[in-house]
Image (tube, rainbow, N blue to C red; front, side, top):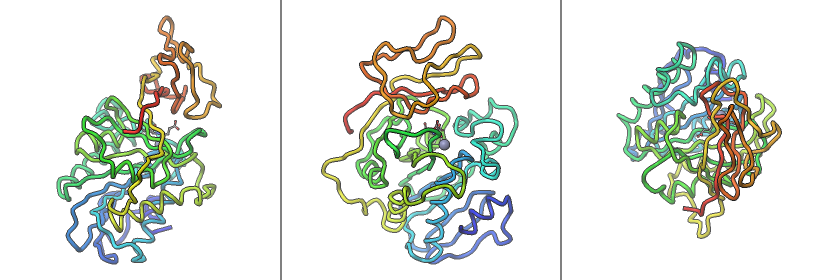
Length: 326
Ligand SMILES: O=C(O)CCC(=O)N[C@@H](CCC(=O)O)C(=O)O
Ligand SMILES: [Zn+2]
């Protein structure tokens, strides 16, 4: 495991806070935040994040492998990169979060939360990203790597924040090259890290769901090799490295409705063993809270991230409608 990830997981501050790698200089900015700037002039900035949820370990291991390859000089970096390990304390304890879900707090939503680990972290990460984008090249990408709690009919997929403009084909093609079999398009803003970078910095952002969440040491990293390979190609060659796909293959969905845990009386009628992208038919009861009932509205809707254990006011699942590839 590379030194930055190791130090972060151990909760240590490195003795050396800046230095030189092969073809780039690096600077440790905060616990879990490091910037890599190529010596040559570049036109692109990338926020590459993992570990926003502390139990999602495979993305941290992938990131570590990519950093190792950079430090060995196997990749000639062509992006200004901010590497972020989102929630170091939660990673140390192997929990999704310590007090509250960090990925619901961005865009200033942290202000409404009680002081605690994640509230402080959301504020710090917003500042770190703001500082980076204020002072880095104008083409902006953000790839935020996660793994899902449940199994999935599409094992690897991307979740893209709401965006007014069309998504550039090169971005979507890179996501497919990274092995994502489905792309889910949010329709309204939210408190995720990718929504934050998209909304405030016009970044091309994606939450990449790369498999099922497992503890450190139990990930079959072969299953993640497409994502790692695509990242290494991207960092060394840029989006131009993506082979042009004549016929995109990813299935595409938009969020049709959100299931929100309204209060203590909220009941989610989706069994705990339901996998992501399971279809439901028009009229089926999904959730209820007293007189307020939520049913499937379209002929078929597909469930994503059902979770009855979220805090009141937060999303307990998304329902999706399939759409043509943009
Ligand atoms: O499997 C689950 O229920 C959650 C996996 C996860 O952490 N997903 C992200 C998606 C963020 C987005 O909507 O872009 C999350 O829930 O924060
Ligand atoms: Zn996650």
